[in-house]
Length: 289
Image (tube, rainbow, N blue to C red; front, side, top):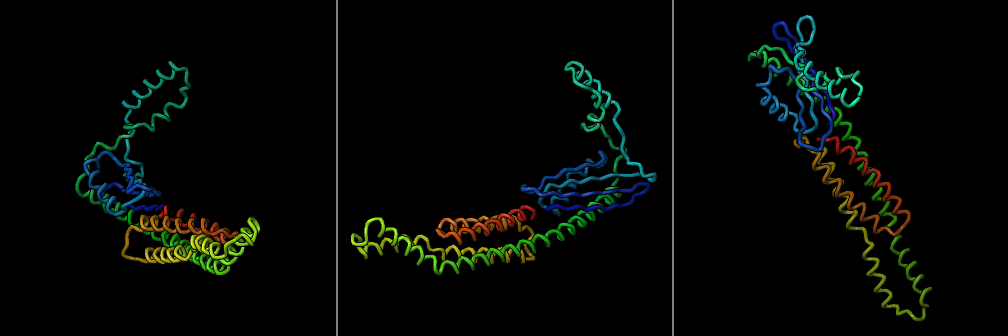
């Protein structure tokens, strides 16, 4: 789920700034860390901390240290920059390629920006860790607000699907008799009424019409809609996205079966409207943990 969190902490003559950003991801968690090299020893603990609290999404974490004069505590590695420039300039000359923007390109390459040579002490890391936890809490608040909006939207669309199902039920009361009359009329016109065995025709019509019955699909559809409401309303469930994704697929199967059995223009139009609402629900489910 999309979110943003930011927090600051002070330590000695430095200000620690932590930004945490999350985007939707179908993976469990895709974590990217950007921080000073002095915290490399804590990287494993940091990854575990973030993974435990955020669980899923494409997560970017930025940790910046600023001195009292508000300048970032970052150094440029001149030796590496010069080495990159020499190699790239030589390649560009050999290929006849432009080399005007080489420096801008080099600044994006690995190890160009080097952190301070200072080593992080335990108290400084605790200050960083505290800022990270606050930033994550800020991000989770953002996520919770967005989640409530998504939940309200999904519940409205589930209600619309259920209302469409009631419309299908209303049509179904006359649909079967209309289909039966139409088939009987077509058979009589094709072979002649006098050549038809009424009992055999009745058996064939019943066999055919039984395949068009949508009672089971409507019953399962109602059950699936109730289950989505239960999942959304369950305050103990942390990760609802996978369950909602699964049950929305089940709703899709029932709607598709309704469409294949409809054999009725008005009912097929309702099925199209149901599919439209379901597609919007699926889009929202992709934004949920």
